[in-house]
Amino acid sequence: MGAAGSPLRSAKREENPLTPETASLPSINARLADAGETGETLELILVVRGTVRPMAVPGRWRVRLDGGGVLTFDARCVVAATSVGRRRR
Image 1 (cartoon, rainbow, N blue to C red):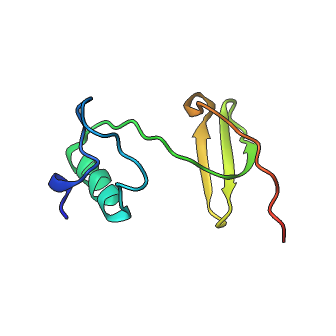
Image 2: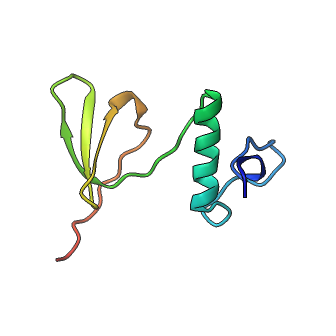
Image 3: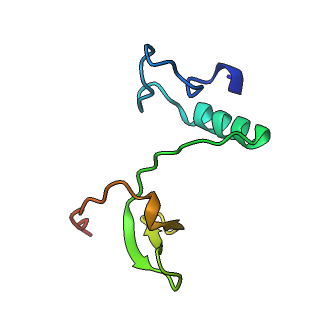
């Protein structure tokens, strides 16, 4: 499915919202690629789980993801933070 047929296209209010059940990884990648090629500004909502540490720059944070990767972000981007119990080893 090409980006033009992606379910992540801007939805009108009367359409069903995007849910994990209606989006696939290929359609998400297609939508992001389309926005990257056209320079479109997107608002992204990400769910990230990992260990959080402050960076040297005030207001910047890094999170070590469960898979070993690292994501850095500005605190102004956070809309919620929930404590998660530790996984059993």
